Image 1 (cartoon, one colour):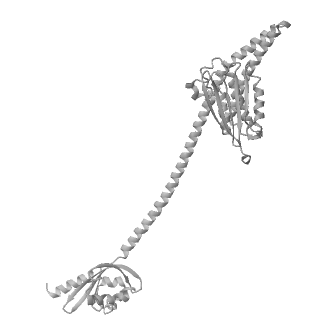
Image 2 (tube, rainbow, N blue to C red; image 1 turned 180 degrees about the vertical axis):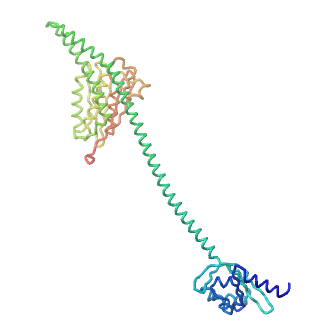
Image 3 (cartoon, one colour; image 1 turned 90 degrees about the vertical axis):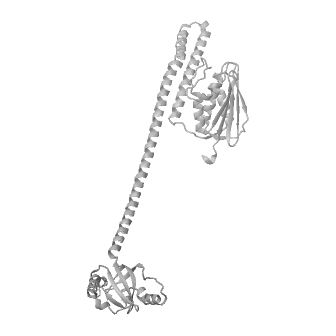
Length: 410
């Protein structure tokens, strides 16, 4: 290819390439510039040729550019030459734009020149910024959606907990209803069985009394009157058990502490129990208390003691003693009730405080199987505890512990 054609080809490429091309001398003066570079920087070729290339650069490169070239020419150390890098250009109107600059060195007979290829990065940077913006928007949306999802999950968890609570309440309600149904069924069963005997006794005794009209039959009348009294008492005990259990089940019994003397309460209870003891039975009180008042629920305590003493009498034979020991300090009341009765079979003792439980050795002794369950409920209400020792045919000893209320707690 001849020189003329070569020059035309070079000029054609130089003038039509889409990237800007600038050549500069060793002194940093612009020698040639293609149309793409003129368009990028907003200058005409005549504006640029012969001017220092740093006219196209913002500070600090504007000031330092001469030093870059001089340093390379002096030392041969390349910092820009042969390397591509992103830099910022300055247009004629003062606006800045990003571009990738690739500088090469060309050695000619007339000297050394440097060629800079300028690829505009404006659209690429805008795209990158747009991508970053979209990513940030997506991150914000993800964060927001995550928060919203977290709120929904938390609400679902809360709703689930509420449903679980409702389910537990429903199960408890159904269990309660089942217990009440069982209680009614057992009451009907007990009523039909336990009420029949005393009612029959009352009816027959009343009929017989009506026949004894003569004075000499007074002894027989008294005997039948006593049978009526005993039967009425048995019926009253059964009804009292059901009434107490009903009040406890319905939460109508509260722990209400009052001041009273424990020894006086026990003496009054023993006097009351004396009217129902079997022939020859006696409650022996061992009083280890001080004469000071205590603060406790006297009504509940009275019910516990009466129930345990009644059981001791009921399940003991005539002429047997019941040992009743009481003591207290500033923290608690402790008492024990020991009988010489039929005792509780060892293999059945684990069921002793279960509602309606009656040991298989009670034979024809009347009862509902509720008494000790009621005692346990009263003690739970007072924060107390009950323990027992029993041997079949020897007797049973109940030990009760009840914490006292401090005046500062009332």
